Image (cartoon, rainbow, N blue to C red):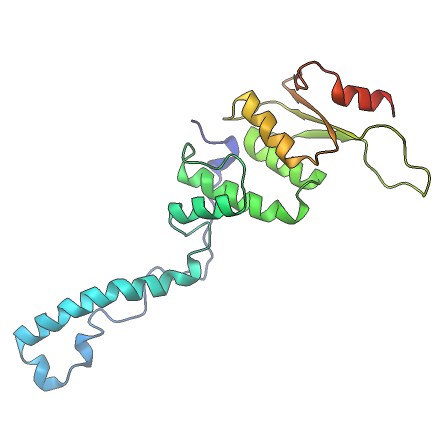
Length: 204
């Protein structure tokens, strides 16, 4: 499966991340008394424990970055994606795409179900700007229009997703009481019969 077009942008790591620990190479051996350092066998023996301990200390050193999608192991990225119920983030995408999708989902989570979040998700997958028309708005009391609520989404491509998967993605992001029209490259792919959301617009 091809990565989304937008994933050509590499998620950047924080500038504060240090590539190596400040710990000295022989941090354990260096703590031995001078008399013990003169014994080559004993020094090599201590280095065995130093190497084993280094593995545990390396985990501790990287713990603050374990939940950072830009730095975490890809297995952790997939776990965080499942935890956030991120749509479409799976092993079929490359690691760079998975990281960017997780970052995007996390960034838009507070606005989930809104126009802003929906546009961001659509553009992530299609790689092109999305056009959104909808019946929402701010109205004086008693002046809100009657009829069904609707939203029309227009994109030029579904990116790496099959059309049915793209429809499922959109319907999962749009509130359940909203009628949805999805148009890809000028062709309506949802609803299949062209009735639901269109009817809502005609009643407006």
